[in-house]
Length: 337
Image 1 (cartoon, rainbow, N blue to C red):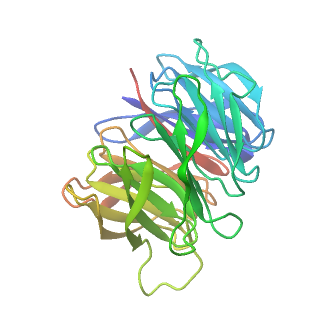
Image 2: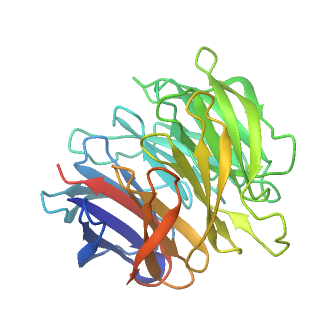
């Protein structure tokens, strides 16, 4: 059994479902009030704590998670700006946040009780459109993509001190795409030294090789997320890869589909699978820890669709739709320990 959490920005709450690991069905929804337009969610590596950014009040709330998956707030602290993404480092000692409108990133220490602590260890100004932040699998480097248009169309590269939580600009500091693709979110291949970005303006996915000595990126491949005959409005949102590293998915907002890709086991490069219809404006989604199911939320419909992932082809087959509430902003799945 796992728990699936969805933040509802316009309803000021987080809703939790129990997820059957065998069937993928969701049941027993429970709501937890969280004021201030909750948006991004992050889980602690221990599975015992969850964090949510409150975008309307520039705060983060820390929650302990009881054995039933219920959330119990243990702290709330102020942030420098409106947080659009949050994650912990690999050891769970620091909470890293990015700020789209605030144009930067921050690092907060996490206490022994699991609560994020103020003031911030560090606040770094980068540029408008800082949309995501994560440490690499070695916990030595940090990447921060920035979209195009409102932002600098770049990925900022840092070295990370996982003892003190400090970010230091790497050399080179900025990786700039060859086109105005607008890197937004990213994920790592579970075994290869590969990073994938979803490109908001470019409506594409770029494959980067990570140099583990220098902590810098080298672009290998960019593939479109849209059919060649589509000429309507669209932008990409999040991106995730299955735990096996076999398949990768990136939703299209406008075309309202989920683009799927088969991942080459030796190179990490991508081959398109196809496009699966989704709820209108599929902003947020998540893949279960076993890589068998994908859940995508429609920002404009307030519904969550469940898909079964074909383990041979990567194709998505829908098998359920659940009303969740207004403006679902994030989907997070955690196994029950």
